[in-house]
Amino acid sequence: MIQMFHVYKTFGNDLEALVDVNLHIRKGEFVFLAGSSGAGKSTLLRLIFRDELPTSGQILVNGRNIVRMKPRAVPHLRRTLGIVFQDFKLLRDRSVEENLALVARVVGMPTVEGQRRVAQLLKLAGLTHRAETPPYKLSGGEQQRVAIARALMNYPLILLADEPTGNLDPELATDVTRLLLEINAHGTTVLVATHDLKLAKEAGRRTVFLKQGRIVEERRLEAPFKTTLDAKERDSDENIRGGVAHTPC
Amino acid sequence: MLEKLKHVFAHALINLVRAGWGGLASIATIGVSFVIIGIFLLLILHFNALVAEWKEQFQVSVFLDDKITPTQLEILGKRIQNETAIKAITFTTKEEALANFRRELRGQESLLEGLGDNPLPASFQLKIREGYQSPDALRRLSAFLSRLEGVEDVQYGQDWIERISNAARIMKILGMMIGSVLTLGSAMIVSNTIRLAVYARAAEVEIMRLVGATKAYIRAPFVVEGMLQGGLGALLALGLLFAAYRFVAPTFNLASPIFQAAGDPGFLESSMMAGLVGGGAVIGALGSLMAVRRFLKM
Picture 1 (tube, chains in turn red, cyan):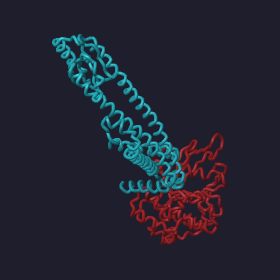
Picture 2 (tube, chains in turn yellow, purple):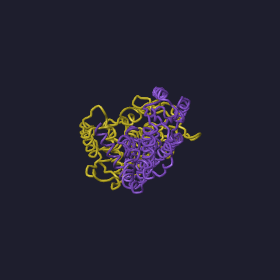
Picture 3 (cartoon, rainbow over the protein chains, first blue to last red):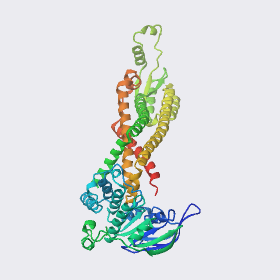
């Protein structure tokens, strides 16, 4: 789903953000990208959604070489991705519902389908009762859940999350990680950049360690925690997929 | 498609309202620029009407030798009539010339006492075709006519023709120069206002980019906002100009005595007004594009 081959990224003349990064993430995988601040996690994510171009190397996303991609094709790449940030990036002057509906409008989703999708995702995020509320009246955890719901609006194949729990206290962070795991359980490939090893350990998923722009280690951390998505829910996952069977949530 | 258009216009209007005083200042400044451009347009329009009227009435007088014989007169008349530059020719006898002169001097007939014999010559009055009224062509025609037998003198308002032609040219050049500067200025004003609007919506623009909005989708509401500012500015200018033209100028006798004699061409033609508003919208759109382009460099 995501493949990086000998990727280098240098800012200016000598600031090496990424050095010879080779990374393969399979379809449906949940991967943590761990490392301290400045390790290159955010840069790596930004390369995947083509906010930056690598200095050298090739990147394939869903089979397409995005390094050679023409700028006008970038919006279409991004429509296959969901992106979540530490600072949520929600519009303060719009309600939760409107924040989600913005995506539907941007991608040209028919109004009725957009409304249906918003309702589904608010339900998934447990925020149906907050639909009319502006984001600044929500807790940090709720805001991040709104941001995740927004990222899912266009049925992305891949969800990229940059420190999604960075601004949250441990309990809320666990909630958000659980939500991400649920989303992954429905088939969406998830890549989460975090400096919080405890979370990665709790989730028990493959973790790629970055240090000074290099991948230094890769392993599955221990002790997975349970998602709320039990077997019965897994069988009928239509509240996320919304009837669109060919695309993951 | 309709949905998208609705979204674009709705957002442009919302942004314009959100821009508040900034938006109003932008519209007002464009309005002032367009008032100046409009004044020049009006001046050029009226001046052209004056020149056209003057050209229509313009004639060359060919004064004849008193000793000219009827045969010579007939040959001369035909010779002149055959010239391509001549549109129409009328003949004024010595007697008619004196009668005309008396008419012109009505009330001051005493001036004519002691004049003795009629000193006024017979003459041909020539109307000149449009394309032959340039100073050069008239000079050539005058030289040609002077050489003809029986012609004593050729007169036309040479100085006036040259002065009017020069004035018209200068006004056109000046109008174009001032118009260009003001147009550029207006575009920059819109650009700045829209840039503020883009910065105010930076978060939304960033989110739209991240969720896969095309540049055109992000740009469209800003461009429409710029168009609205430019178009409204031009409309405001037209309103002000019209009010000034109808109510202020006649009070000061600015326009009427000079122009109305020449047949008032009225306020700007509807096509010109549409052109001004359209021009304002285009300038607004361009200014807006300049602002958004810089911001959207991905």
